[in-house]
Length: 326
Image 1 (cartoon, rainbow, N blue to C red):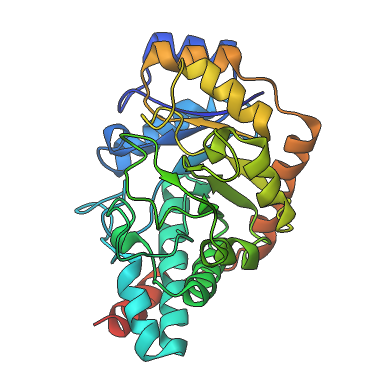
Image 2 (image 1 turned 90 degrees about the vertical axis):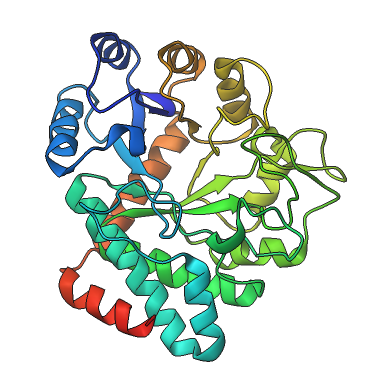
């Protein structure tokens, strides 16, 4: 199995995609709005993937609430951005923590029913007044203690649904003044405030790197920097480390070379989301096989989610969530 999670082109697998996935089986796939039309179509696509991907392969979705949602109305409910939960927490800490757990549980339950087992949330970035709005209301708060607590609550909600959460974007994207989808943000150094939510949540089964260069530490962005990945491991994190999307314009070089560099720097999984066949092929050809250490981390992450899963009443949770945030 290749140490990569890759995107797909559309709502139906194409013959050349099927051939590629069989020739170079990835650790998983990530689906976006372009891959999702309605529950019936999605079910058919998931069944097709079951017949192609190796046992245990991941089905990942970026689903935070607010503007980052791939499962959308009218087929799936809209949930608020996490900033709304942070604002509630500022007035009533207990209510905010409960709302964060409910947000995670609802997203997790919806995702699990749709066939996903890995969700790219919670956002652990600390909001900054002069930071680029690519994070904006996706962040719970400008208070790192609040972000740490609310992120942990949301992650535990996701786990209660049996879904593996990914904390992002380590070691912190909130202060960046550029959108890493379009260019490489540069900061002088990592701040203690930005790092704190990741330190407090080093127990998470997954973290995602940030495409940000910290000039005092390295010339390379964190995703490609052994120095910065070492810093993340020094927090006590021993879960699965996945890159942010390697198709983003913050990085340079071919898709395959980016994947190889991220894995060489210490990422366990290279994430490439474009769904462009030639790019996906380059990534899967150049990505190494899962290392034994990465495979063990994946096994542990899956076991954590299985052990945490409980039966959830989605309707009751949704009603409570709506009432808290009304």
